[in-house]
Image (cartoon, rainbow, N blue to C red; front, side, top):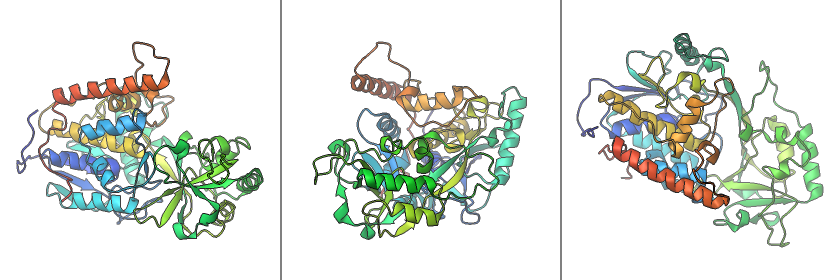
Length: 470
């Protein structure tokens, strides 16, 4: 495909619904290729239970885009996206805050920067309104995320039902009825932390010591555990069953699985030696810097579904947080996603309506980077469709290809959202016992295959300078 030149006009626009991580990335990818976009975002006209601003690409749960340690699965996915010129990953680097070996961002700075870049792009027309209907005759990317409005969810269910009637089974009923519940971690003001009771360290001294660690003795842990499991949860309203995503379980749900479960999960002390004692504590709570000013920290892995008053009491049992001032308590929100294996092709197109793409968490990926990745791919696939090309999925050996392969080839009856892991990648032909060596070889193969695919597909060949720092 020949790259599109700036200023070249196309009769057909791409309509993108939702300006979260996936929608924002998709819009910028289209604009980079000279494709005009109508970008719909219902905030601030209509808000959601989780968002706090009207900015694009707002991160609602944590500020971490996961590990940057070489030859890990999260690093591999980001490295592939860097090579494919993901614009949001580039902006994330601009907005990074210290986080040891992880890539974490100042949330407000990040979303403000994404909003600024999109707002000044002449090929992107921003529509601050709720989209309730999908034009089946035009090219559309649905990237409304897990908090899709009821009206649009009903429209998506209608489209999905049509696909099911055309031969793709929807074993769970209307595919938009698939969901899980996700939770948000609390945030505390930095100057309210008692620094005399905590210490700075990175696990196994890996990366810089950017995390505040709140150590607990056995007695302190027991008091905290007893208070946590007896604390009052938010009323379940009409929800028949709280179906949580396994890697985002609220801490009280983890605790109910056994008294020591937290010590092997979010409160794991292994590799966090206290310099004052020379030993790891019995349990530890980690705090990660929330913004560039370092005036707030989030409690890593402490998402919960407790009433705010109960949270206040329980969390102040953590050493160093006795007098903490909380900027935000933990919350819960519903995440909706479609049954992608029954409905989507490996290029994120609906089987029965190939002009309609899905991207982001609504298509069954879990995680910030995974959402950006599907937005990057959907933007490129849609651009190819506009210019008469045929979208082609990235190679199975790559992290990008494996992620798409999972959400479009998993068992529709058992489909659950997924983060990128080495389990999604195909095994090597030769068995390698050493885990680190095996992962290194998988990463090398993935990047080599991706490079060949990008060259053949002319992927990332748009010539516009969209999103570059000015």
